Image (cartoon, rainbow over all chains, first blue to last red; front, side, top):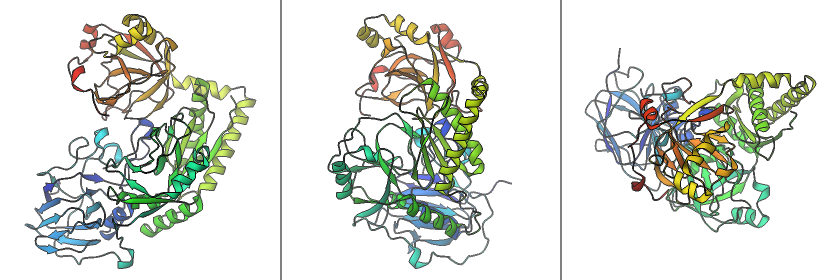
Length: 319
Length: 253
């Protein structure tokens, strides 16, 4: 039996996209993996609702988004703080909310506390899953209700499961585990020197480590462009090779680009290394113009943090 | 062919394996073997795999295997594979080559109406545009990598008489099916997209469709030939002539 529509989008000024943990095993077709820009916040939204951790939720970039409630449902909001309100009442972020028919949920624009919020629903949104993933990728025309397009005003949303009929208690993330994304400070981001790192001159290596880059407004889910004192890549290009999440590539203009969730599968610019998976979310929540400083880290640290992260969200995961 | 693999852990879940630093058809086959080898070694520990010209990027699940164990396991399996291949005088390699199968034929309408750059290239090379078409359709190509866009196959090697550099100002829109060349490579744009390669024809074939299985017409290591067709054949096969005008999409990109 088809589920009734639960929510209707009443405002979507910036891209709001269906997202899950990614489209895997399809890179041989040239498809990007995609996935949530801030995986920590994404996972929390599902965990708060007791969902499968891969359940589809909505990634709201830069806020200015609202939904009208058509039928009672339980949702959770995490990530950037966009001054979420239920009708006239301010809502706590990183918390589940019980919505009743006739309610309206509003998100304002950025508050210098992150740029991407997650709206999850009990059971996960019921949405198209091309190549087994909800991820919406415009340039691949995949995901969403309209071949890769972001969600539009008037579109109606439902869940894969029946919603609780009576008011649920709001569940929130432990205060010490809530992320604050202060967009006024410098982001400190760790990376593993790898790939062509040793082929850059030692002056360029130092130049990369010793400056605070500015995050360009020309940044998106594919890559975050940095602006700073130019590097001189030892080569205009290398033979194209597979690109890992967080790869820091340097095109001929000498301004590095950190490759994010919607990165292309292969690329031919020399790379300085790989940003730690657990630091990707810091960059994902940055505002254009914010500064970022890179620090050398290693595989061991990256591995320990990643394993700890996976076990935290899914204690039953087998090893 | 015995080829040593240089393995580098580039993150907690990615192993980049280099097999050489020169593009060659032999290396293409080696990397395909390595890709199968990785699938066998890692099984369900394997998250994703990207084969390219000289490298293999192996993404494993760090919850199921540590990065150091992943590196050791692959290195051992590859060394063993090479040893067996060596002693069996490439028998399994021949078997592998047979599995690549027959050549995929791609129909192309080579005509300045749809081949926006064919006359410029002909001029640059001091040949006719018909010769550009001939040189392009006389060779058999291999798919060296798939990427850039869904189903976009990088094919080589192009006849050196057609070697070109890409457009300095990439087009914001290239029509679906555009057959293009750049350096010593050729490719077909599966869908309308931005692009900087030189367009020398248009194919009526479908190169990427979600509802097809597999979704992409071409995959890494495939053998490919282009066949020149007439305008009537192009239209018969469902080709589209007027989806975009050459004049309305020069610009940023």
